[in-house]
Image (cartoon, rainbow, N blue to C red):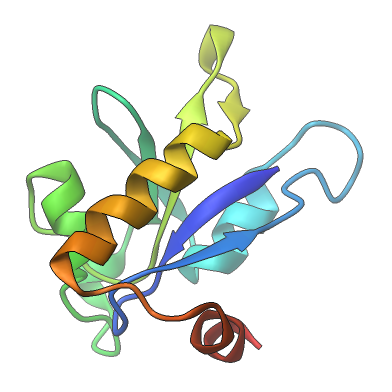
Length: 122
């Protein structure tokens, strides 16, 4: 499942992540790993944005400008963007979503190159 990973210190990178590591459809543990702890859902009209539920309590977390702009509220720490499926299931982002994000961020001059994105999460 593809997700868009929005680190707190870099404008954006897109990372494909297998959120079904146990093979049971559960995405809880992989999302927790990506956001650094317990997850909280921030819903937007188009996307689900997952953040660390206790992010404001962590001194190492900073304002995530990209996630904050996407959600229209102040968010801290890394964030993960997914789509909502039927009955509250989590779905990956589409090719169209990836293109939309890339074009938007490129127009703002804040997209990191693919190599920088890989280096960031390695």
